[in-house]
Length: 223
Image (cartoon, rainbow, N blue to C red; front, side, top):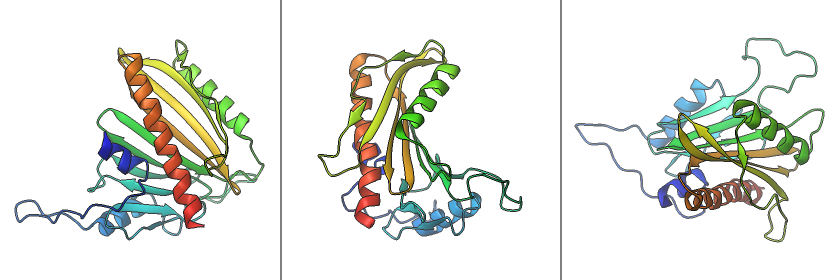
């Protein structure tokens, strides 16, 4: 769990040295893996690599940083919207202003979003939209208790969250969304983890707090 939090919550501590490949199983350098992920997402000029010894990228517009597993497996960069070759439509979000990083480790799934809406959007609207989407996908979703608002006393922006217990393929899962605003950007975290009981759900909720706080801290400290 500690490694998961460090990699997916964009940990503050120094990155561990990247293991060198062996003759039997050579490994690519972290920077090369990160470049390949950017190219795969057609995200040149939207994301850039972070030289920290990890497979890390930063969204240039928002400053959101994504630290993937050391070989990049089970992670991807997403640029929403029309492909590069498609002319933009009126009132559409410009390419590069709606992005995400998707990461999976074991049964835990985390996706972080950074979006700049040309028409504006509130945190309340964002949470309402996520709740509606969760209930559409799983009408039996049950709200999980927890703080819906975290204030700015810790030096981070105001955060709003919503939590549910859902069932997928017979498994009980905890799923949560959190949103905050940094400058013109809406940052959002979606966190889903197994929750066979309430103790596991509480542990997942605490991990999601650490993950989202890490996302926001990385952005603010880089400004």
